[in-house]
Image 1: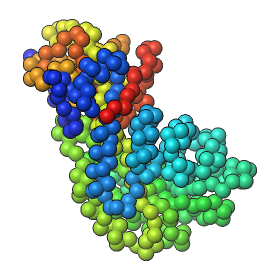
Image 2 (image 1 turned 30 degrees about the vertical axis):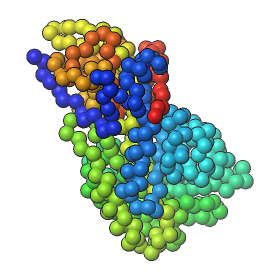
Image 3 (image 1 turned 60 degrees about the vertical axis):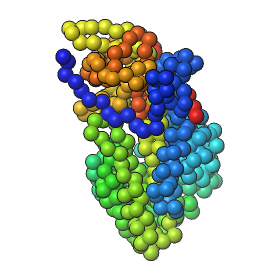
Image 4 (image 1 turned 135 degrees about the horizontal axis):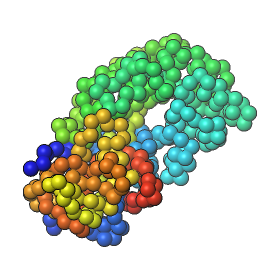
Length: 411
């Protein structure tokens, strides 16, 4: 028997109907029959319940921002604009999408280490907040604004002198392309003020995909202390401080959800005892995958079943060109299995060990490796969970001319 490799935990909120995986009240086979395969399905109800639970746990005065790079699908983005307090973007293209989705300029903040002059101009003209990532970028923004005779709205993205412990991607605590080192911040803010620009405050992002509440609590406390220290150096209170995010979701065997109750209680205490210089500052957290990741499922149909050297492969019509992260090729060092299931045999017990692969001509196209699954045949549908974030737009859809998967928002 082949060595079994466990799969990650299937998120809550999904049901079984007529023996199949049910998403938003529709079975997998109904959805694929109507919309085709491969297919990303996003559940509106799960988006609502996630944000409701988060707001209940967090301090009432805290703003929640959606980092739209996690999933910019237009219907989903329109829904998120209604549910959150701000939209965080990372390109001129995302600026256009956010505005088209109904986000107001005051809701939008623009981060990213390589903003082109045309993107900066569009952001200034739109009136969104630009998170300045370097002294040179500050000079470019101010020069463009002066030429256009417009007042830019600017925050300073800080590269903190600490990181988020246990985070999947560290965004601070060393030499980084993101933000500016603490030593440059005060002088840059003074330049912004001297130019007559609207200084909005700080954006301080230390890391992402953390599952330990204690690490997030510690980082938030350090972030607030850093914001106070920088404000004292500048001699002016910031209007707004983005504390970053970092809340992860369980992808792999052994992962446990973040205890947002603990995080919220700690943050309530921190915000109730702020240094005087931050007493009137508006705080926000910026989340992407935590808000949308578990609300999405990738459905792909089995088109071949084959045996090689005694091992069974289920070959699907999808693959890494739609779900790069699930294949292990999006930042993971050791490949582990995402949560997966045979959607059309959802109520059946596991009885065989299989590898689920895509249709591409590369051994990297592996969606689930040596997983225990119910017996599946050609025509059955595979579900890959945690597909609501960094799926469709974070994957090479046009590799080998395959093209994108269909996306739908239901519920």
